[in-house]
Image 1: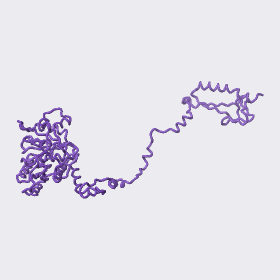
Image 2 (image 1 turned 135 degrees about the vertical axis):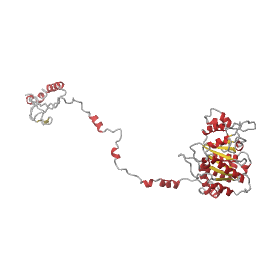
Image 3 (image 1 turned 180 degrees about the horizontal axis):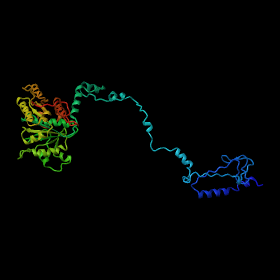
Image 4 (image 1 turned 180 degrees about the vertical axis):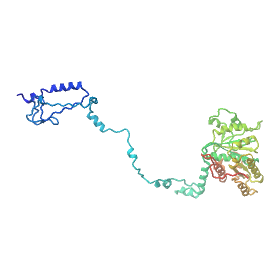
Length: 439
C-alpha cells in the first residue's frame, strides 16, 4: 500500500484540466460543486490527520479520498446569465470605502432649524450706531475759548457756531446728478450783479469738489473777468462757440481763466473794437459745450431781460438770483423782474428764485430792509442780505480770503439756500424750502 502522500496528488491534475476545459466550453454557466459528507476524492487518498477540506468535507485519520466516491452536482442557474466579471481587488474596495465626495451634501443641514447667535433686536442699526458713537473720534474746536483750551490739552468738541458752519458747507457740497445753471439778473445796472455772481461762484468753487464755471453773458460791457481773473490770451465765449474738437476737457479749459478759488471764468467777447454783440445762438452753442464738462454754471446776465442772450440764459437756467439794492427803485425793479418771469411762463424759475439785497454803502440804508424782506416773504420768496465789504467795494479781483467773516458767511448762506434746491436722484428737488409763485 502506497504512502498517503504519494496517492493524494494523483488525480488532481486531471480534475484541474477537466474543469478548465469545461469552463472554456461553457463560459456563461455558473457551476456549484459540493462534496457529500464522508465521500472520498481520489483513490485511497488521505489528507492527513484532522484535516478539514472546506465546508461539509471533513477528513480525519484514515479517511480516504477516492475518485469513485466523489459526488459532483452542477446547477445551471441560467443559460442567459451575465458573463463572468473580475472581482474587485482588495485595495480598490478599501479606496471605495474611504471615498470623499467632491461637494458636501448640505441637504440634511438645510432642513435643520437656524440658530441665531444674537437676537435681531441686539443687532439693530440704532444699537450699532450707539456702539460706534461711544468711541469714535470727533472734530475739536479751533477758535474761541474752546480752541484756546484745546491748545493746552483739553479735547472740547465744536462750538454751536462751528457746527452750524459744518452743516452749512455740507449743504453747499450737495451732490449734483445733472448740470445745474444759475442765472444772476437785474433790470438796473450798477447794483452789484457782477460782484454777486463772481463771489457766489467763488464760494461754490471753493467748497464743492466738482467743476464750477462762471460765464459772462452780458452782451454789452461785461467785466466779470475783471472781478475774477482775466484770460492771459484774451479768449472769449465767442472763440469757444466757433472752435472745433472740443471733446477733451483740457481743450475747453484753455478758453477760460482760473481765479484763486478754482473758479473757471469765460469772458464776454465785448471789446472797444467789437462791431457785433454776442448773439443768443453763439451763447447756446458755447453753453452746450460747457454742459458736457461742468456740473454747475453761473451766468452773469446783462441789464434787462429782453435781449437775445438773456432770453437764452433764462430758457436754459434752473434757478435765478435777482439782485437789488436796498432802495425803492431797486425793489421795484426786482418785483418787475419776477412779474415778467411769471407772465412769460417761467414759473419754475420763480420757484427757485432768491432775492439778494446788496449793501453798496457802509452807512445804514434809508429804506427799512426788514420791510423789503417782508414784501418778498409775502410772495414766498427767500431773501439774502449781503453786507457792505471793503474788499468788494475796491472793484478789483475778488479773493475770498480777504472778505470779512460776516460777508463770507452771507455768501455761504446764499449758496446753501440755492443748493437746497438742487435736484435729487429721484428727479425732485432737494427740499428745504417751500416752492411758491410770485403774486
